[in-house]
Image 1 (cartoon, helix red, strand yellow):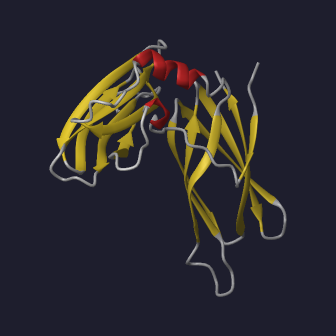
Image 2: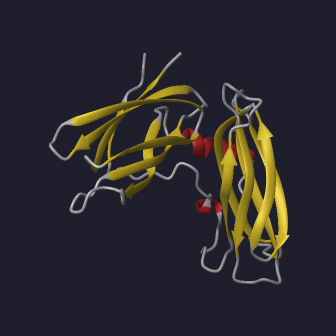
Length: 217
C-alpha cells in the first residue's frame, strides 16, 4: 500500500535535529553543531549519503568540544561517529557510504562537561522510530523572483527536503499555485532522506504550494 501525505506551504518540520532532550541539564551555554555541506556519493546511484562539513558554534574558544553523529544504515542499524575540535569553527567530516539512508542526528557538548549524557545508539533508534512510518516533504528554500516585470512578484522554489523512515524511494508531486488561481504540477523522485533540488521558478507563481509524497518501487 502506498503511503500518501499532503502538505501545505506553512508546513514546518525539522527532519535532522540535535537530540537536546537526551541532556539532563538546561541547554543554555552549550555548543551547537550543524552539518553545512552534504551530498550523495557519485558511486551510489541508488541512494547513500556524504556528510562533508559541519560547523560548531561555541561561546568558549578555548575549550574542546565533542561532536557525535548518528547515521542510519539500510539494514536498520545505526552507526555512531565522534569528532573533536577546540572552540567553534568548521569540522571536516567526510562520512560517506552507499549504506547510509540519509537519516542522521548530530549534537555537541563541551568535553569537560562530566554531566553530559550523550544518547546511546539504541536511544537514537527509538527516537527515530517515534517519528512515524510515513514519508514527509517540505520546501526549505523559496525566494521572490527579482527578474519579473515591475509590479509582479513571482517565486523561485530552489530546494526541498525529504524524510523517509528507512531510506525508501519516493516520488514528490508539487502543486504550485499561479496568480490566476490555477496550479502547475511538478514531479520529483528521491531515494532516502535528504535535500532535493527543485529549481522551479515563475513570475506567475505566488508562493503557495501543496505536495503529495508516495513510496515507489
